[in-house]
Amino acid sequence: MRPRHIVLTDAAVSDILEQAAWYEEQSGLKLARRWEQAVTSVLLRLVATPAAGAPCTFKAPELIGVRRVPVPRFPKHLVFYRVRSQELIILRIVHGARDLESLF
Image (cartoon, rainbow, N blue to C red):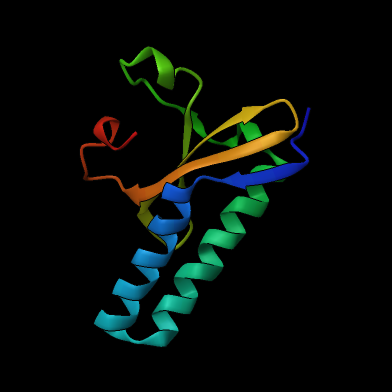
C-alpha cells in the first residue's frame, strides 16, 4: 500500500534547511534552490514508490524497517525514512559519510 501523507520529523526539516543555508553560503542561492528541488523530487518519488529505498542494516532494534535513498544530483546525501500504514515518515536527510546510526 502506498502512503498518503509525508511526515517530516523536526530533525529532517532541520537537515534540509541547514544544508540549503550551507549551499547558499558556499555557492549561492542557485545551488541552494537546486538542493531544495532535489529533496522535493525524491520525497515525491518515495510517495509513489516507497519500496524504492534500500533497507538499512542498523544494529539498534528501534531502527528496524528504516530505508535509505540518495538525493538525486546530490548522491552523497541520503534520505532515511520508514513507511507506516498511510504515512511516509522522513527521519533524516544527511551526508552519508557521517556516523549515521548515531544520528537517530
